[in-house]
Length: 206
Image (cartoon, rainbow, N blue to C red):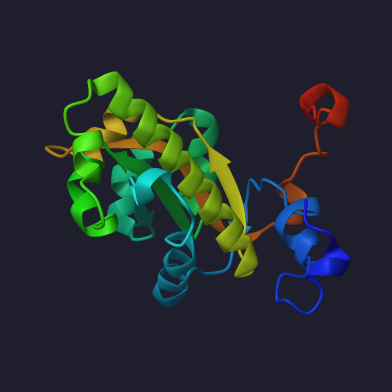
């Protein structure tokens, strides 16, 4: 970990307490949302998300920002009962998905070497692991970017993936990973924060 004093004046100073609270300490999973998520905000959000690192800059995540009545009508039947009403009421729901053929973009995304050949002939389980791992990273970047832009998040995995993929990705190599509701979170909708593992149970310094 960098020494904060050594970083002073370099542009790499630690974020202040307000920023850390927004991104982590006070950030919660909300179950009810208000407000709006405009298209301009969605574009600003992706411009941040796309900068996060992935393996070989593979960027396998694909995002569908569901906010229209037509989109919600397709999404609704795929949701578990416990997630249906809050998701239908949210201003925007992001489908965080991944492209199993992500390697086809590598000649553009990683042009200085033949990175496509690192993946193109791999068996499907290996491609799945790479796509899932890196799209999950990108989904986490999305939540941090959303919080940085003043939005609240409600990530969830309670949906029928086969139904959702048929509704949104039929005939493609794209598969769903998880969902994130976005908007202005209602503080009354959050539960008490659950415990987290202490450092000594989750970490070691080798």
